[in-house]
Amino acid sequence: MLDSFLQGLAAKLVEEILKRLAEWLTPKALRSVPHRASPNCPRGGYGVRRWMRGGMWLFLPSVLAFAWGFGFTLLGVPVVVLTVVAVVVPNGVGGLLSALLAVLGLLVPVTLMIVGAFGLAHYHSYPPKWCARCHGRWPRRGRDEYLRASAPVVTCGCGQRLRVPRTAAGARLRCPRCRSEHAASAPAG
Image (cartoon, rainbow, N blue to C red; front, top):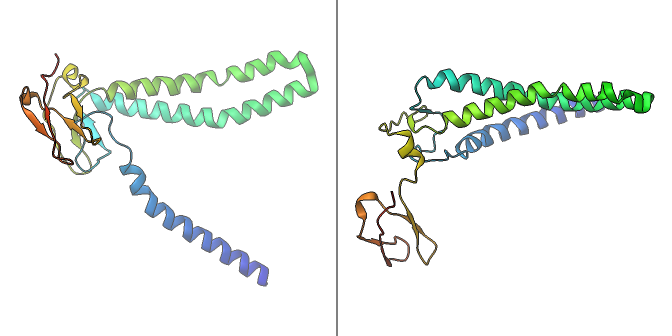
């Protein structure tokens, strides 16, 4: 009786700890995934739509393809390993052909995962348009302009990185940390 009570108590305690950890960690994890290129959402938004024409028609199938491919690859690797071991151990070298066929079974989910990753990369190569979290909006820019570096970066002696605006060619920049001045060079391109 005491053992079952202690087991139930331990299970409830672990469940409560995991629930609290998930509640604490989930927002931090979602905010820690930055968008690779600017302009980012000022509040670190993670649901950014982009200016790609028909973007959702590429984004959603790409997410699904990547998720299904990743999931089936993750589930398929142990199955393939167990199948190879179960075929090769009793049959020896004679079972290598059927073991190879089991390994080729992973080809479809891996291909699906790669296709989904390429679709997501293409979608994310377009500039941000709207943040689903804070509802911030950005002006439309060309994809080529977006992919180029928007502004050169000058590194101060104190380690602070300063962005040089396009309009500041030939002006002097002051470091906010150490207050030293730097010459702003003209942006290339």
